[in-house]
Length: 591
Image (cartoon, rainbow, N blue to C red; front, side, top):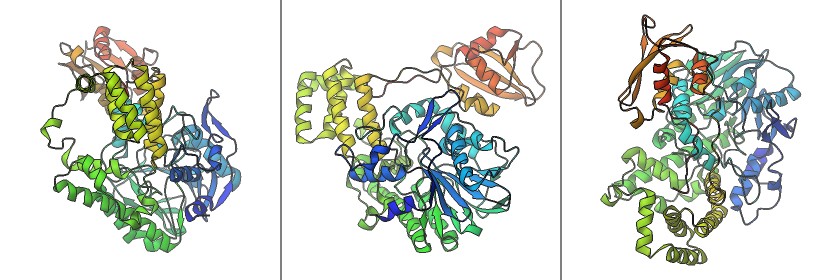
């Protein structure tokens, strides 16, 4: 048994209480049996290293990390970590959904007793780490919820402001439409897959603002290290000194991580990431006998803890420094991505394997952070939109028939990457060409079988699926996070949903009176929705909506039961009628 597999199995205490996690309606939120096929030998449809890595991440159950520290793994994309205190427990990160979080906590309690939750620590504002908060806090009463500084702002900006686009792209990255199988979904690199279910938004009681800050909950002493701009804009590591256990959030896992994600998020700072990991080593390597993360499995032993952190640090440092060096020599992102290789010592480390992030797209993220999307070649400054460009390419190559013939030759020669490029132009020139769609889908399947990276595989296979079956149907917008955000956050979300051209001539306003919070005026003028808090409440004669956040969200969706409108209601209709819905599943692999 190799070292990684041994660590993934170490400390196993109990399997999940049920094979499936269900929501209140009986829908399957997580299926624990879906990845049993990974117990077989690797097929030729999956990269062998990815197969072995996916086998490890699919392991599910309750694990003891060290005395008093436990993890539930394999029931969601992330881990739920439990630290035992004097009278109850502190939970670090709460998974994606209330259902999986509740199931994870129930599994812990089935082995360790019915200990109440005395506090929650959220390491960073990605939904797979906070969305299950309601499942953890159910029945807990008022308990401290500790987050890093900036948590609320970034939870909203990433999950709501860019939510519709990111959600659509996430379906590719995480392969949400793919069925688990040797020819389909084998994992996401960080864990088996994102759970479905109901998500919530934590209401923090304390923001950590500096490295070295100590928080004590139920007798558990937690020492924090702030690491902003690393894996998330707001993130922190947590040392549990009495247990000599260091939780490094998502800053160090058993894979290369993302400098820029395929779903689309703010570009991370590889230079800062490496420097914070160096600070982690300096502050905590001699104070920890085990390092655990909010994905994957722990690493035990003081020497191995240090080596694990050093490998992670050096991967991001090398990636940053060498990308910038080649960038300053005039190489473009695509050229750097083809040329840059990790040193053998790093390439052999789990930190150098691209199961989740990849060297190729991380290089482009570093370049983007410094120089943006433009590579200085004027030919790339003002390109045509894909559909128009495709029409011209077909004219140049002599039509779709010749393009298809050339693509078939490339497939036979193993030139799959250019075959994909050529066939993509064919599909955009004629999206009804079934032969081209089927051939491009086959190319994507072959590329999926070759890549070590789980998210690349998911993107290729999802593209193939949609070429054959079409994009997913539109879905009704769910409640999700929108109904639990703050007033200002909701207003910022509404502003980016205004159909600007349709609202160019609009000039109207209404006041939103939020019980117990105040009154805001919303103006729609020249295609811009602005808002301002009113010191003296709504003006006499103004159109007024009296509702809490949930009530206004309901009104947006045609449910007026939670809102009361007074005055000229047509003003309210004009403003809300200028907003686009958020759920359109826009096309990706076709025009």
